[in-house]
Amino acid sequence: MATLAYAPDSAQARATVVRLRGSLAASRAMVGGQSAQLTDLHEASVDGHRLIMALVLTVVLVVLIVLLRCLLLPLLLVAAAWIGLLTAFGAAALVLRLVAGSAATEPAVVLFSFVFLIALGVDYNIFLVHRIRAEALHHGTTAAVHRALATTSGVISAAGLILAATFAALTAMPLLYLAQIGCIVAIGVLIDTLLVRLFLVPALILELGPRSWWPTPIPGDLSRPRSGPVPHTGDAGLPAASTPLP
Image (cartoon, rainbow, N blue to C red; front, side):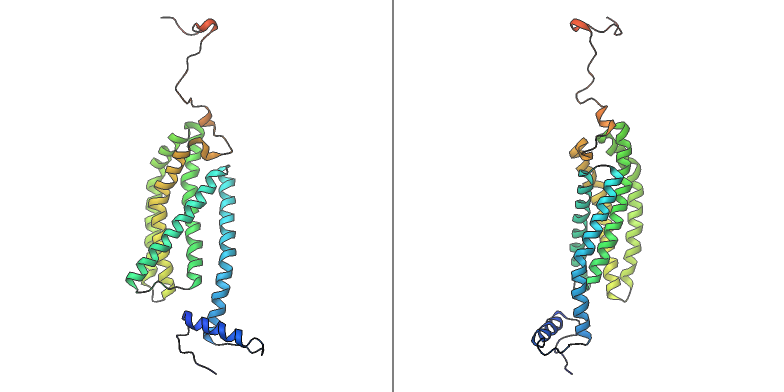
């Protein structure tokens, strides 16, 4: 029996358990206790993060490709969701450090927050971008962005504010990991709703134009002239028979 000089859930305690196991490996002795259990949980969580995050992003990408019937825009949407996710983690760490005095958290908190934010971000992606594609079929990509924002921005913003307020209520819980999840998800939903979905994604689509739907062309873009209407002329450059002469 031995008592560590560090707190059982501290990083120093986990490092001590790893050193003990390394030095006792030849004797086949086992190290147990609360710190050892937390060490095993931490290692399993870190190893599982990479697999679960990769699987979630792959499934999200496949769903967006099938829904939008293109390849370039789903890749950009996943990248935008990832940027929003990292921004939410950074902002939440700053808030937790200022309010609680520490931003340390359990590995499971990061994983749960990742799953929540990616799932919610994909919902807003589907609401907005699918409407843009439906409008682009008839009006072209540029006009579709403006029409889709005019009809869906209010709904997306209201839903995001309600959802952020709901998760923010978890910060009043006495359990630290629930409060941390509530803080991270609430900030992430606000960033995704008010910045990524209403500014970043529409700006990307407007910048790319019809190339957003690569490799599938949109009929609305193909039917719209690029430099204005060109009058039809007959032989020898004269107006066609159907065009009245002045």
